[in-house]
Length: 79
Image (cartoon, rainbow, N blue to C red; front, side, top):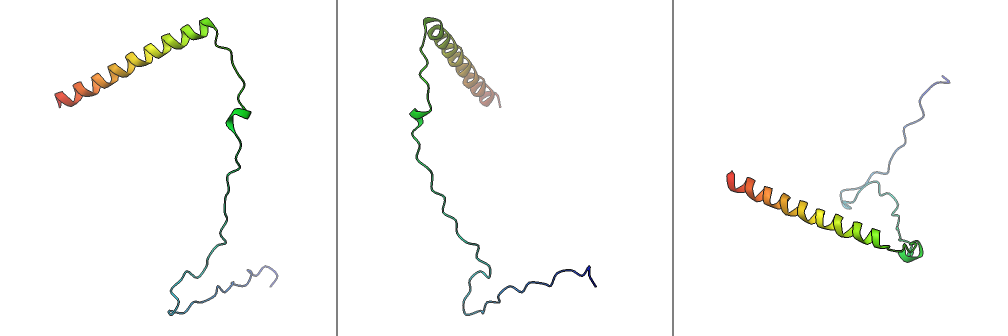
């Protein structure tokens, strides 16, 4: 018939003398391409208002971290 399935492909049989995998896919070596990061960076001037923003956000992040650690310690002590 014309709509018959394709014939079954026989994979190579291995003997028990050689206990290796029957099908071994080809190995592909991936080599990272070295591209320095500083080629893509654009220098941004840090103005005084940006410096103030960094300081305030850093202090708020520090306070938030201290509160989170304190909350964890409090939970551990109460349980």
